[in-house]
Image: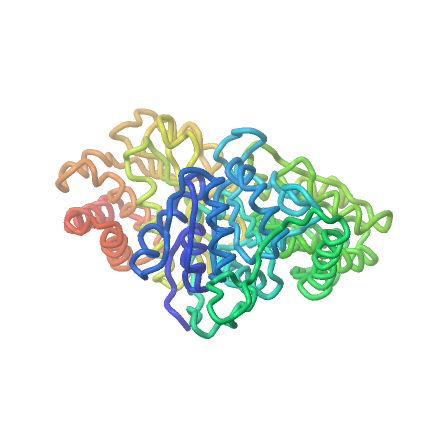
Length: 351
Length: 180
């Protein structure tokens, strides 16, 4: 067992990225992810790696494009309004089949919003916030240790599928502290060589990294390659967690910090004799729709709880269709649903 | 064990640090812990607060409807959080700045003059440590020595080593000020 440290979510994501072999990090500061950038500012130069506080979010994401093209592990991070600014670059990364990790520590929106925790960027993250037919793998940690583990996984999946991967968390997870055993660092030299990278063509044919082709037939083929890859990701990378669903009459679907709050609600409800379970998507894209559908075949009421107006709820209803009742409870603007508040929603439906 | 405490006061009274030290001490004591700051506009004016949850089991919600403990360093904090404290919970209210008594009859409340005790210990800046010492005395959740170690660890991490002796004294004074 490694040493247990008391760290913030933001610090753990940064440290996990370093341990995952992130060699270039580019970002522009924004609350509530500032500690992530601070940790990188202190530690990346110390390790001889690249840290750039870019002049803007646009600059940062395009620096990521450059570093990813050169074949190194690279990351940027921001919070909601800053992630909006990065969307063009994310679409380019997807179109060029470039691996990169993007961290969004969500805050209240739309617009400038506020700096309180929110989950209102689910659509943007899972449905393609930029232009074009693309997806990102979207990972949603619900505890500080899991934020570290999923950051490591994000780099792995990005490389395996040559795709941008988003770590989607909120201000509460970024700011809170929890004991964590940091993941073991990987050996950068042990990573497989990226044969496609534009890292110097001496002695070989030049590689080209591009998301552009004026011939519709050629561009269609490029799209088909992406779509094939997405089907493979959907088949192999769905992740979720079920808690106390075995004998449940009603289940909550929630991700991220709301899911951990819901774990407390499961205990409270069961203490009152309500058989409540929890279904927690860990990958938001690919969404664990089939598993949820299966769960809804034995549970009559599936309550979605989010810090949004019901963005994931759309995927929940798409998966469950008419198989179960699908009520919704959400908070917006940075308001956090407390355990009591969620429990009273459960009671409304549990009868 | 399931202990949750809200520590609240003016920005600058050290509530965030007191919470971090309690969380670190809890972790060192083998407990599961979460520390959640209020990082919103409350940081500027009004009240600053943080919530610490200590438990034998993994912590679900880091936000708490009814904390088992409240440390209120000023009146606005007492006004805001007093109604939320769980029945049979503990309230430590700073009588140096709070003139009224608690309205709750179903909690154990203590009113040490935290600022005055801190001044006696060497500096009013150690008010937060007086409060924390008092809190662990009346709740008995973690031994004082464990909190002392956590405090030194946390101040070292933040590059404030020179304040360790003052804070050690303040924790002890706070601990000695109240009787279970």
